[in-house]
Length: 537
Image (cartoon, rainbow, N blue to C red; front, top):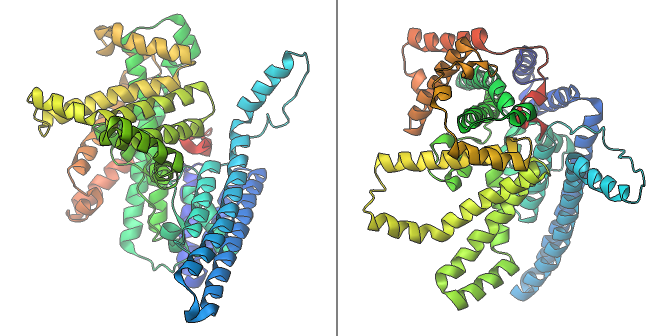
């Protein structure tokens, strides 16, 4: 069931009616039934995977909690006679057992994720190896489809276990409530990621019918539909054309590449953020606040700033569970001390800030897919962010020497354009037919310019799947998106500001947006959850 469909809206409306009619203590049961009903629409086989992850993680969490409780009860039974050293030793033993369970469960869950998502890459390599010996090896998993939301519920489950190990919250004893945390239907398609202590608790709380929640949630869903149906699905024809193998093989100039990557940048942003808006809006209508996942990434002034604004829930997960643990790990700490001794304190501080991004972005790269393009893109982002950290003092000195006013709007505009250019290179790396094609396209983008093409003077720009009329719709829609983004970037909360307007103006704006979606949205019977770019992750 696609989030961008009338079927989903009808399903959501039905869930909301039942959700607010039943006694409040049973609201979480309604959400659980709805979540599994929604998930069943993606295929019965897929449900086995999410059930497996749920049961295995649930039991591991209870086991970890039992160890922690036994340790605390034993310390309590010793009374006042127990020393600090004894407490420390008992905690150390308990934490070691908990850590072992935690690691084992995480490895199993990640193992399932890796095998399902990357079996094609793995078995292709095995097949090529055995071909050398003229042995025929068939892949029994080649027809396996990635279950809906596999990465999202896997990461949420791992975060849940880590937080139990850290003592942030106790293990959930009700398997139904834990199953709801794993399978919550609005977020299962493409996130955002969330933690049990933030969202899991909300899912089982009682929620009263609140007009503002219904209204603001519906407005956010409408905005998500606008971004997805009017912009993303329309502009996708351009990026598909420019990055097709046939087009690349036929020859191209830099302006065509830039046009294609510009289209793809808007496509992936409007597709992903639009889907997240629908997700967050649906949850808000139930009184549940999901974490923000995008914060106007095209206004980023550096690649580090971009990744703080893009897929924020994944960034937060990586920072909490990968970045900081890597920075504080023994090997990195030891290397930092060596650098501090040989090259000074600044060099010692740089080591953790350089090592951690490489690990994080390598993992983000292969999370998208185990191909050399994704690996290369991960390393590309890691190099950019690490070099920025390492060279910040140099940049500061250069700015002082050249008397650049770093607070001026012109400098910020330069930073934004520079970041967007670097981002375009990143997009080409993963979108081009091959890695060699990507390098060739990047080179051409800076060496071969055709202004007649870019300004539509020769008409070729309208032959890439979007004609003149649809191009005007795109320009108008992107202009609306830009204006709204500028207002938000300057601190205006659109929905709250709309509440303060007169009734006629407020409803006029909402009806106008709904009309644009209905008239100019791209619809079709082929849509399902996988049509969202990040739905397959």
